[in-house]
Length: 166
Image 1 (tube, rainbow, N blue to C red):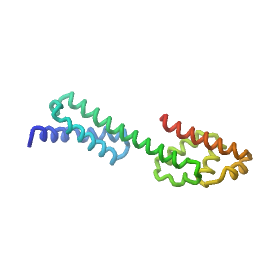
Image 2: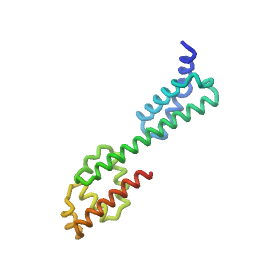
Image 3: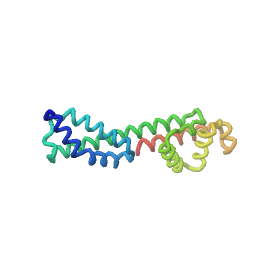
Image 4: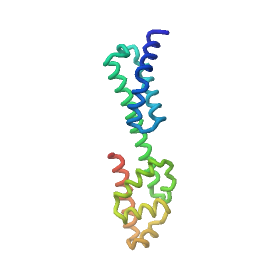
């Protein structure tokens, strides 16, 4: 085995479990944590010649930083995907909230809906879950059709903005 191969094997032996625990703490998902560790090892192997001895504090710090960054990148990507899914589900098409596939995304939406006024929450639910027209919503809530449309758009914008700011 080459020096680089031995160094890579030693890095794996020393750091695979701690790296997994760090990634899992960020991602809270077994498979994603494993993927983050795998991505990290690919990055480490690409720079193996620049690393000190596997047991050195500098190498340990670099390994921890690498896996933490990989996990945070995955977390951010997951958040962007959830926001995209929600943005599409809370579109002006109507009746698309029921198409949300992820339980986590649905939980995010429910949390954001709780922050809205009861009337705005009802407008989003009527439009998003039942596909009710603005005219139907207006009649049900005794407001104008234009007000129903505008309130839906404001509520939608608030939900997406709040999720992006998290």
